[in-house]
Length: 99
Image (tube, rainbow, N blue to C red):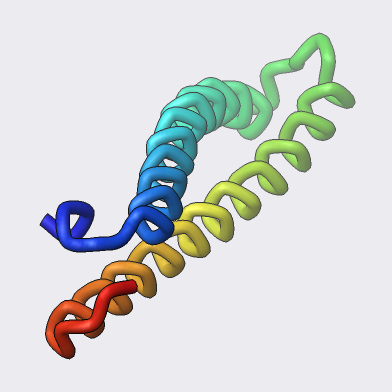
């Protein structure tokens, strides 16, 4: 609904933000799968079952931690920007002003 009510500039920005959010969702699914696999390896490590590449596991752990933090901050930022755009369009519409 909001996309139909906005000007060309807001429409382009909105489409870009929506596409970025879709991309983040796809990356989130990949990250979720990687975390599940990592969780199983962590369980083996906790049970003291030897992992062949323990050093690589630790590096992967740090990498996944950083990826998770980046994913969350990017997703929150994109949603915030999209909501700001929606509020702007709705405010301008209520005041009968074009963007």
